[in-house]
Image (tube, rainbow, N blue to C red; front, side, top):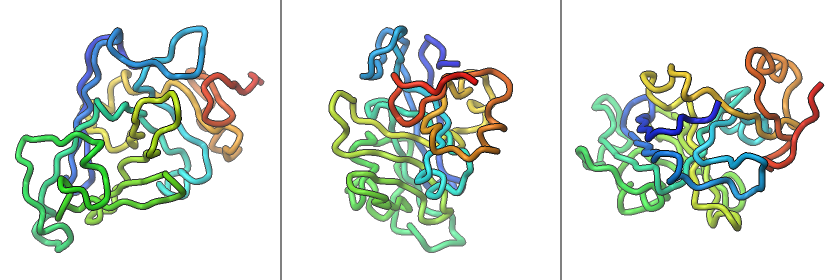
Length: 210
């Protein structure tokens, strides 16, 4: 099911809490829509399970699930790594200040200097971020973004704090890259409430119902 129409605020971060983020989603009339035409407008952020081969390998999950967030809604805070480790000890606490994601989630950005944030260029113009201390995968982004899209970060849904994650509001609303899926994973994810299935990343292309 899509996110609720009212304003939503989500918190999350890595397992060791050296990287924290906040997602501020305005009420629905203020949200951008997905650039692909649809009978009913698809508002951003959207939540989707991902069956593509690259994301399966990069995350180590047979079914990565993302909340695809306009960069203007995502903010990041850095903290020193826990005292029993050495990675990121040069980081200065941001306190309660969250940096805009477009500048903070970049390799060697001033905001992330000394932090545990690490970036991996998985393919041209595609960047994945993770915590160098605990290893948590956090985001995927394309820069520069494809024409027609706002700047975006795909945030791994499993990094959202449990208090938000256990609500029905964050139930995935569609499947992406279904054509790349593993048969038994697709069987597991086809039970319960049916959601749209897209063969790749285009939300105006659908897999025929069986």
